[in-house]
Image (cartoon, rainbow, N blue to C red):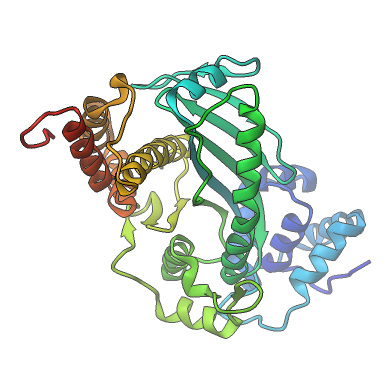
Length: 386
């Protein structure tokens, strides 16, 4: 059983994370307030709990199970205890969005199956059902226009940003065939000649328990939104994380790319979007965006991206794109308007998040191109209305 000579905020945080406890549960277990635990962790090496609390932490550690004790040892046995903080555990919610085009007829039959339930949506009929996943929770969103979006949610703990980036690349290789199998399984009673294969995975990371503060926190979120800077993609047989000193340098010197767009609000949140994904951390959870707002926006964007991709594929194959009349160019014009026009009750945070998501996804251009293709097929002329 590991022992601690003198507890500091750093060891306290490592124990809580090793026990897989929230700040609230950990505080209740020790008999102190959440504010006390937060103060310990924020102070890191500079904070030493009172003697009676040192004893309580000793007891909590002694009661930890084998796996929790191993995690604690791994988190506290490193030698890089300097200001760069590479090595602290942090917690993220990983949200992956995997869209697949199935066709409107197949989507309608799929949504009518047992286990699917209609979900409120502002402008398009959608049904949802749970999908089993060994390492997280997954929901299938079936849209009436003919797209299924699998939303996979996983809770993750990592010590470095590079490990998260490498996990992202490695897991994508498993996610795509898994998603294809799930859509085939769900659609097995429903024949469809239009059903395609999932082509990509879009990630969003919600940073729940950061290991950085100040400028480093901003840099960490930017790196999460564009993780290619943290992996060697030429490594064989799969991308490998960069060495710790590379990450330390990026955190210390800062990292930015023109393709990264901010949608955070000073004092309330830190948020960044890029073509590779989104990263978000609520500094003030009561005033920041809700996770459901971020998820709903991304699901709609990925659904329309896949829909437009199907139209693009028909054009590139030399065919005139054929879509159901109710989901033709007027449907896309309405979608464009709804996504790009602010609503009366929409906050500035929602506007910034939506604009960053859209501009980095390239969806507005795809919607316009798809509109044009469908109008030409319908024999209409003139400029596309926006």
